[in-house]
Length: 187
Image (cartoon, rainbow, N blue to C red; front, side, top):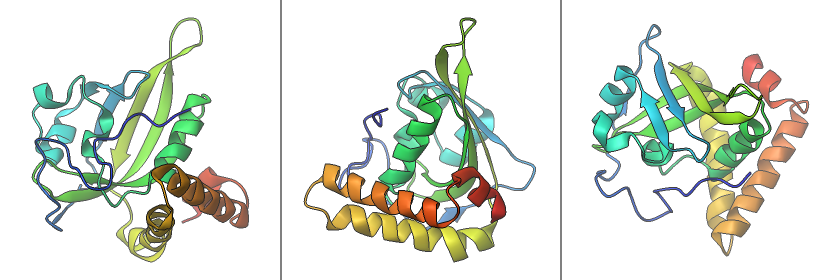
């Protein structure tokens, strides 16, 4: 499955978003961010926590691509891998850094699942996000994502960068035993 169009392409931010501030926001352990999208990734539902932490109003995000909150430091390969999984009907867990309207950011452990209609066809996607383990972010995820982003930036084109980053992520998953979900839960 092709990744839906991103609002951040390496040098542009969403029209109403501010540049990154470097300020991190935090979820508490009991908070859950919920969102739902259609098949193309356009938001059809967000809960109050989604809106509160990202600084958006519901009217600003409903009907927009979910990547309205995509942080510029998030590797494209992770999203490609996610879309490949959920587009095939599988669920996925992933560590994600998100972007607030004012330029702040926040990390989450995302659980993304396809939603199915009465015929068994995928009709959209549902995501619950929780507070991640900060030590895992610092020790494992940040260094891995930096390597993936470096591969993306070093390539001669965005497509080549995504391919290089996907190759690196695939090799990493293979080296960790070949099961991404099992690796995430082993952290």
